[in-house]
Image (cartoon, rainbow, N blue to C red):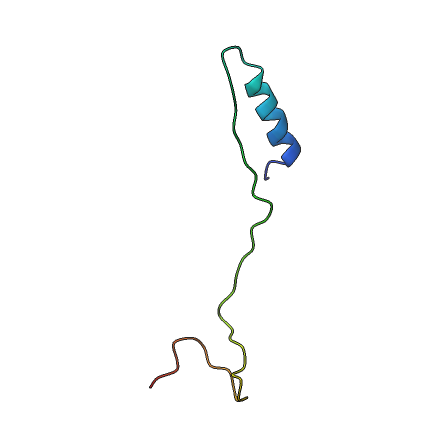
Length: 57
């Protein structure tokens, strides 16, 4: 189970409340996308798309 943004915020607030902690810095990545390069687009002149690396010449 991935931690939620709310759980992260609560953890940071608990750390900030510790005596002697003068500051806390954190950042949050909004999204992670999986990119798929297995398929290719059709060439501008039409034809059948070829997998990357299969074109010679």
